[in-house]
Amino acid sequence: MLKENIKQVRKSRGLSQEELAIKLNVVRQTISKWEQGLSVPDSEMLVSLSEVLETPVSILLGENISESKVDELKAISEKLEIINSQLLQRKNARRKMIHWILISVCAIIIIIFISFILLKSPYLNWDYNDPERAILGVAFHSFEWLFVRIAPSIFSVSTVGIVLTREKD
Image (tube, rainbow, N blue to C red; front, side, top):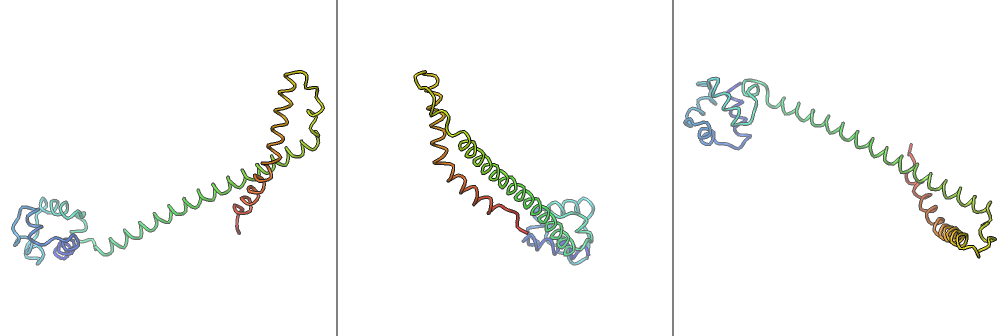
């Protein structure tokens, strides 16, 4: 098992026997003997080998490499599934928040329009000879004038947004 694992990991890292031997400060024949099963590295050399090959010693000693890769892929896919689930939850929470903000904007616009209708612009009957009242009346009139012209567009866009952000079954 050790001999096969050393050879398999070395090849997967794209190293020749000579290159691995140079990195471990041994001769190429030593690597060849390990891979043929004629000798085995001592414990220090096994640790050095695992560091050079960037592979855990347990894999070199006998853990099946293909099983390890399958387990790694399974773990990665499970992590990706969790991440995707979290992203979906965030997206849904953001969509719900935007949906309720748009509903609130529409409700506020309707309330302001109703209050304008009920109040019938009382500031138009004020005596504008008083400067403070004149400024206040102009401010009210400007707000009403802008609101009546801008609010329908905002209401329309918000209504479309509400339809687009509604929860789909």
